[in-house]
Amino acid sequence: MIWSLKETLPREDIEEIQLKRLKKQIKKIYKKVPYYREKFKEIGIKPKDIQSLADIKYLPFTSKEDLRLNYPFGMFAVPKEEIVRYHASSGTTGNPTVVGYTRKDMETWKECIARLVTMAGVTRRDIAHISFGYGLFTGAFGLHQGLEKVGAAVVPMSSGNTQRQIKMMKDFGATVLIGTPSYGLRLAETAIEMGIDPLTDLKLRVGCFGGEGSTEAMRDKLHESLGLFATENYGLSEVVGPGVSGECTELTGLHINEDHFLCEVINPETGEVLPAGEEGELVITPLTKEAIPVVRYRTKDITSIDYEPCSCGRTTARMAKVSGRTDDMLIISGVNVFPSQIEEVLYNIDGIGTNYLITVYKENYIDKIAIDVEVTDNSVLDSPDSIENLLKKVREQLHVTLGIHPKINLVESKKIKRTEGKAQRVVDLRNKDGN
Amino acid sequence: MAIKQISIFVQNRPGHLADVTEILKENNIKIIGLSLTEGNDFGIVRLIVDDVYKTEYLLKEDKYLTRIDDVLVILIDDQIGLINSICQELAKNNININYIYMLLEEYNKKLPLVIKTSDQEKTKEVIENLGISVISQSTKSRNN
Ligand SMILES: [Zn+2]
Image 1: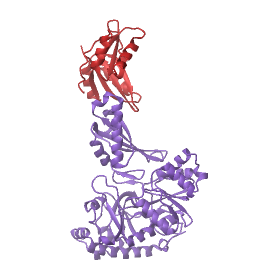
Image 2: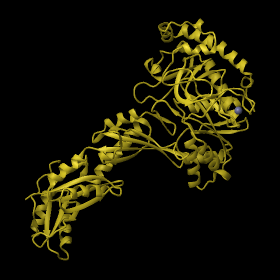
Image 3: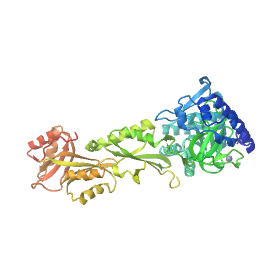
Image 4: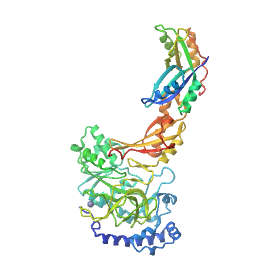
């Protein structure tokens, strides 16, 4: 089923809507957001210079850093009383990025999610179990509202307590699972440990996964272990949260809600817009966002866009699954973390040296992180207990500060790998061996 | 005569202890005593060698985490029940034994035993009271 006629318009019509909305949006931003007005003036551009979609290339980019620098409300375009919801993204060092939603933004968000879950196969007869954490992150609330709009019954389970999640899925007869793909696999494993066979004891049929990238191998594994049809959706809080794009049942890429998001793919080094189909960094300009309308937001996610109509009947452009990042941000089971943040935590623990190596890998399709750390305080050689205590301290600090559960290997300093004399800080093995 | 022990941090993986012993062999350093305490993923190697400072220098050059301590070495006869008497006596005095290991060669026809307890001073006293000789001054280790 297709939720909205907007998803099946001829390309010219889609572009006409986009251009109309872009012009209006840029005019409004120029008027309402001093930050952008200054930026536009600096490069000598006026809203009226935007006469075609291609003219967007004259507009400045926006980065996460820009949002941080304008923390908390510097980029907002509406008075605070217009805001009905706030969300924020992780900000363990410095400020988080805060986003707001007006009443109309909330409606747009619901609409976008309704389209995505519908294209994944969810209907009003479904019972949707949400295993994203409810809180400042956009994942849980975003999916929640859209699923309700579709008419599905929502079970707002939130994250944690895996055994209880399985019991609830079984007792409520959940048919749709919402969460990160790695947590989906964790649920499958735990169910088996509990003596529950997901294939016969659970009724799951569709999975709408997000919050982190996934691979075809993971999709197969989710299908085999949970018996569901696994789809992926994409989004980020800076432009809306989940709701930018999602997979239809043809699995031909992620259909973009183009009437709300104008997407470009650029060369991350030069900033130049790339032709359709070429791989580069995804840049998103929300076309209808009221509260915090960013311009050309650099996602740092690498993908490509296909504008051909899909066999599912939709004509909206499809982006390929995100294949990587332009920066060194790591996404560990849905948690975003930069190596520099890990470094900062390590540097503040006495008895630990300045050399470290982060290894990200998959174990049973679940993201794992291991950190090789050098010990520098020789008083721990006193007893194995002293070393265990140090290990515990490192683990706790990383968990409390960054929300990750790394395996810490205390190693001899010289065993920490270095490439050409320069320390190599991160090894990502996740996309090796078909994972 | 103070007996110095060097402790070295190693990972509990094949070849890691061998890396250390290789350095000693290359530099003609004789191992007189050796013990390996195991943690989950790591080990602490404790060595008595014929040149402890050279060993420390070489290992530090290779960025190993090391530490030198004065240890108590007691000389016992090869006799049934003797170790029991020592342990019983220490227990009576509420002294906890952290580790014990043998040296690899006899000393005056007696077996040298390295012992580290919760109270080295008192241990020395207790053991000497048993009529057992202690060949080291149990000075406070320099890291304490
Ligand atoms: Zn499609």
